[in-house]
Length: 391
Image 1: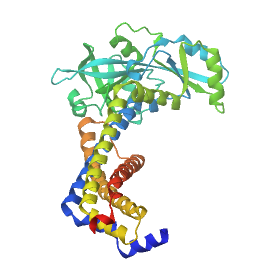
Image 2: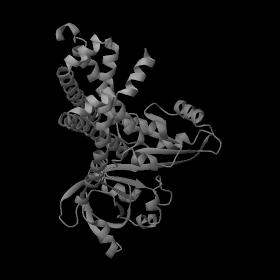
Image 3: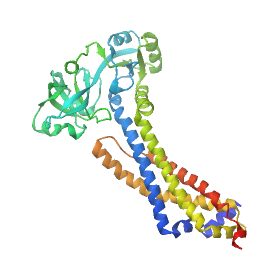
Image 4: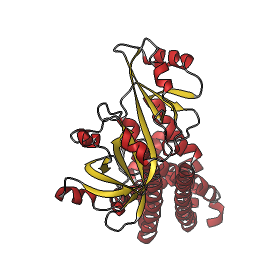
């Protein structure tokens, strides 16, 4: 039977002829599917950019294992812990060296408009920085000076034309947390949903800007293992050695923990996930209406085919082919429009909104699924076609 159907399809592309017969209906179907795809691409792209922005600093941290206060939910609201935990970690034979990172949110004053914006501060030892940011390496010597900071050139433009100022001045003053600092360089990290920009500075400058922070209270502990040491074994030893008020994480675990917070705890994952579902449902309804109208308009022709000996399986197969054609035709403009939309959003928000092969494959799969679902629903009407009604 399948060979017979395939042969018949080669002779008469019934599904294609049905889809293209009504040009206006086809245009509406393509526009509706493209809109649904754009909505799904937009939601998924923003969601992934939020996760990428939230974990940008994690990828720059230099270490094999990381200590984190067990009560910390995410990097934006991280809770400090005692530096003594690092000294305890040095007791493990697998540990080669330890380091630390201070971080906190602060108020940045735009030097031109005098308005205030939220930034994330990162305090490091300038002689042995806990982060490895290539764009900052050449200027790290500048932040050895007290009250000197480096500015994130990928921060939102509302923070001021800092890079323009640095192009004409080796440094210039502004205020952070109502205290004056000197901006003496720039690096690239990127804004996030919790901060409009980032500042890199020495640990001593950080402790001055963050009121009430004690030097022995650090935010992230970095542990470098000896060459050849087994990371999982060292992690197990440190977990048994250290009190349970700190977590001992590998870098992938540290990154995944941050992503999990934004996916499961924060509203971001829920909002964007719901938006994706809405896009899927919108596309399903649109395609169903198109296919249902097509079946209703040609019910007599389907009944005639049944009278000629074609069964419901063949007719439903034609309907599913129509759904497949619509899915492909609608996905193409939806994908193209989403590329342009991503570019606009990335320029406006400075978030890393980029198209990926995995996301394109996911949306294509969702598009096929919603069109097949619509075809399955519309097929109920098709099965009611009765040859007796036309005689």
